[in-house]
Amino acid sequence: MEMSNCKRCKKLFPKINEPICDSCIKLEEEQFITVKEYLRENAKATILEIADVTGCPAKRIIGWLREGRLEITSETGELKCRNCSKPINSGNYCDSCFIEVNQEIDGMFSGAKGKKSHGLGAGGAGATMHTRKR
Image (cartoon, rainbow, N blue to C red; front, top):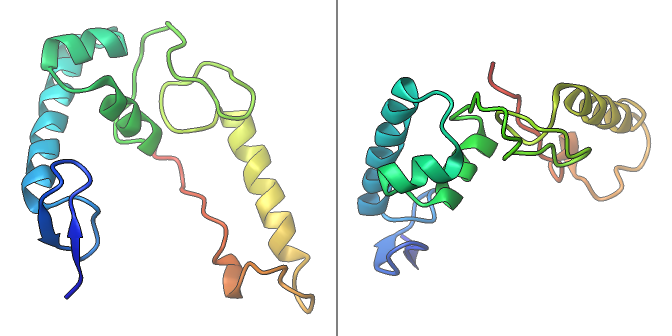
């Protein structure tokens, strides 16, 4: 079994899938629940407000927003599309850029039949896209 240092607490742990240890995973999930509960009562809160009240680092909250685990409803424009910089509530791309990026990826792979794969491997293993949760 591979051993690794936890990216959060730096303790040595048996690495299976996650880059953090079980203790840090548990702590992160507790923080996530706290943030989610706070957002239920304070839907228009900004990221900095959420971080200040819950004690959860803003960077972690932004990570959950990018992963699509959380969604903000404030109109502050704190989270921006990685392509056009339009304000978004969750994920990495606004709806129009998300569609555009997926069409580009689909085009790359639909034209690849019978052609060289350009190093992406079978089925495009080098490209990663996650479906946006609605």
